[in-house]
Image (cartoon, rainbow, N blue to C red; front, side, top):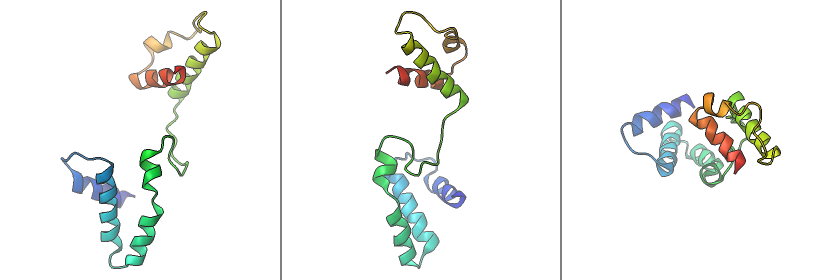
Length: 114
């Protein structure tokens, strides 16, 4: 993975990138790294489900990446506490939203409310 990341950064430095660039760079890396064994190249490239990795909503298809943090769990719990109170009151730790949450944690909070 480190070899690919180095290859990716070197080849795309100071450029605009998108999903197509990522896919093309990965294919070029595999072809360069495993050349001339084209059977290995084809085998590797066939295993990557780009549609699922890039266009399907949710966690990564392998289920190995986890971006949950203590803060994001706390923000989700605060939102659930508001929902449980059905708009009649604020939970005791409501001030965390204003005094302890970064913009990312506020997004986690609002995502649960939606």
